[in-house]
Amino acid sequence: MRPNSPVWIGIALNTHLPTRPHRPLVIVLDDDAAVRNSLKFSLGIEGFSVSALSSSDELLNSPDLPFCCCLIVDQRLPGLTGLELLALLRKRDIAIPAILVTTHPDATVRKVAREAGVPIVEKPFLESALLDHILAAVSDSKRRGEARL
Figure 1 (cartoon, rainbow, N blue to C red):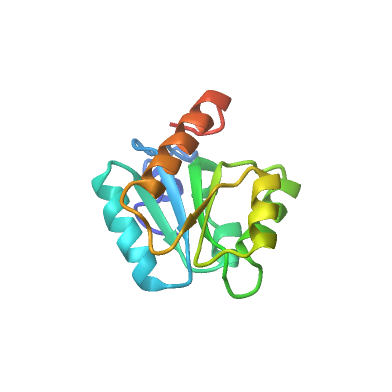
Figure 2 (figure 1 turned 90 degrees about the vertical axis):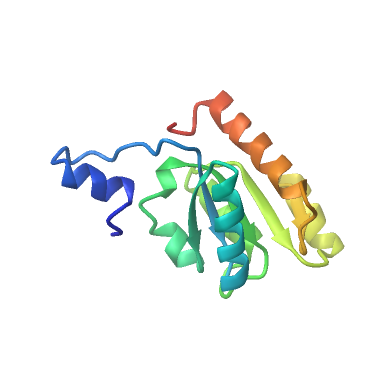
């Protein structure tokens, strides 16, 4: 548990209850450290709280997951693909808005993502394409009352 995580803050204050982040939380899941660090930096500048993770297991065990209002998930992860991970989350009734990032998505990936309602943003990222999708996801999350802001 990280000292600045919502769960740690709750324990430190002796409330034993998770606290809510002050800024919308976006979780970035990518096995490429350069992508994670770049997105964490740029999204932080845009006013988001960012948790950057490198594996499906990290995401599934993250104490930040209940507070997330948008997932940015790489398609090509070790183990589960991004779409497989999102399907697993949906089976667990975790319906956080998500954005799939990948290079050169094939027709099958595009079809499965479209059917799941998951937008694709291709790497390398265009200037505002990813941010536009994140803002839409955060808005959708707020509207549906899923994000704990």
